[in-house]
Image 1 (cartoon, rainbow over the protein chains, first blue to last red):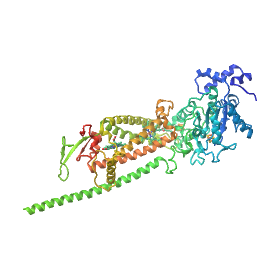
Image 2 (image 1 turned 180 degrees about the vertical axis):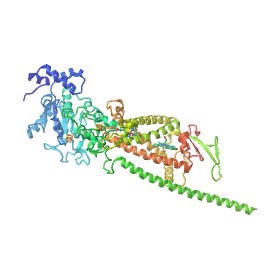
Image 3 (image 1 turned 90 degrees about the horizontal axis):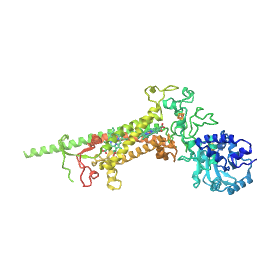
Image 4 (image 1 turned 30 degrees about the vertical axis):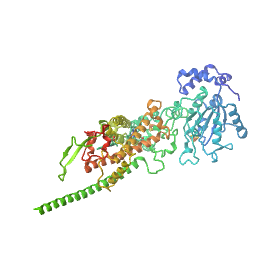
Length: 374
Length: 253
Ligand code: HEM
Ligand code: HEM
Ligand code: SF4
Ligand code: SF4
């Protein structure tokens, strides 16, 4: 396969015009969520060397890769063949076994401090636990070794970003996120279960173009893709505001496409581009297909069960929803207050009676004494 | 310290005895205004909050009839936010009162053994095991419970503002409160906010009962004190030192 130095180099060698190159750059600028005035920078970046990427797979289902390879704009093939130099990815590569692991070592040595590490999956932190072994080593060892020479780390998927389903109760392997084990490198979290394919390619394309991390929010997620709540970009929001809800997946409200809040939609606390970019080149997204958001980009989303109720139940208590617990407590309190009030009233009455008796006795005593004097 | 000046005598005691009553000034207007604004806003916040979690709905595919009066979810939420901000603003004034007036600072004296002894005494009283207890400006149990309720209200304000400002995660509000969404995710804020809302509701129910009970059974002049800022007491309260000024004089009403 032919190797290219940069995207522009590829266009030139393939005989594609400068004009279409600029067009592609313009599209890329829009895709990355940048202002049109950034175009010259994008062009400049596209003329630079391709960044080397190592892609590791940990404790995961590989769903993120499944999503990644379905990216439409930029096309995954463009990204992995032309925009980045993907030197190691054990699920996408044809090579395997000893030689491939050897290749990894060489890449680490050759591009030390310059390559990007992309990780999918969580990390079981007990290296001797025997969970998630890669090429005879624990994944923990592998990721530490590779991250050591990386310029930056991209945590793809909720598992890598937050621990994800692996880390859900009761978390038998004690799985943790990448940022829990890698402390000394810049980390970009790209959560989602899986993330939207275009978001995955968009983030790596951003790094490939500019050689720097995209602007990140307080959870280290790229602002351009995780800057809005689903709820605030949802096309069903007018139904929410008006109080028009589906109460059941089979009712007329559900058929009419009303808001799914009462069916447990997690849109109000989830940040992702599903509402604006949608999936599969804008075809649809979960809420559009009639199912509430499950909050797959959020920390602990799997533990916020049950999914079909507005708020999760208090973990592990099995007492039902919060309002039910509150109502029971209020009932108990009402009984308690009534009993307390009644008892205090009885006590006061007795006490007052005793007091009155004492006073009466004292008065009688006085009476007797005064009589005796007479 | 004698408390002779401005004493007045109450003669309406049933058995014909006389009591010397003294009026003490305790609560600044900031505290009282905050208290009543809090009463109103907590009632509204709790009611609207419960409706936010389970919005009204009239059954299969039906419009909410109450929409006709604009009781939409949008409206309910805005009401919640407006009262949330009223509560927050009133709380800030309450802090100002705390700084300027000694009577607004009736906190638990947790470093004094006496405080804990008194606490046991008052608790025995409320467990109905002891008929009377010493008179206080504010009894140790009340002192503890008000610290707890302020803690809960602060939790409510912080989690509430954090959720509220996340509409624009790049704004100033999110900069100030957004860090709360980081450790356990934003859903955890909803759960905490909702649980604490119930805790405040239960506190309020107990509080109103205790205040009314103290007023009627122990003549502690409670309810009027939250209006006038003063208490009229028959005995020198045990914790009178908490409202002496720097010259050792008692602040009188
Ligand atoms: C003691 C005072 C308060 C009480 C009792 C209270 C109660 C509640 C309750 C029960 C909920 C429903 C829980 C849910 O569905 O998430 C809620 C939601 C909420 N509250 Fe409060 N709240 C209080 C103060 C505040 C304050 C000060 C703010 C700040 C503006 C605030 C902002 C919010 C927000 C943003 C929500 C979520 C609304 C939504 O998801 O649509 N709350 N509150
Ligand atoms: C009609 C209902 C209420 C009445 C008659 C009432 C009455 C009073 C009275 C008399 C006090 C002064 C206690 C003392 O002498 O130490 C007080 C204090 C207090 N009340 Fe209420 N209250 C009511 C409702 C509420 C509610 C709903 C809340 C909040 C959930 C609340 C929170 C407080 C707090 C925090 C204090 C301490 C004041 C301070 O130190 O800032 N009250 N209340
Ligand atoms: S985030 Fe979800 S899709 Fe991605 S690897 Fe983890 S479990 Fe699979
Ligand atoms: S469907 Fe979900 S995200 Fe959309 S408006 Fe309703 S609650 Fe919000």
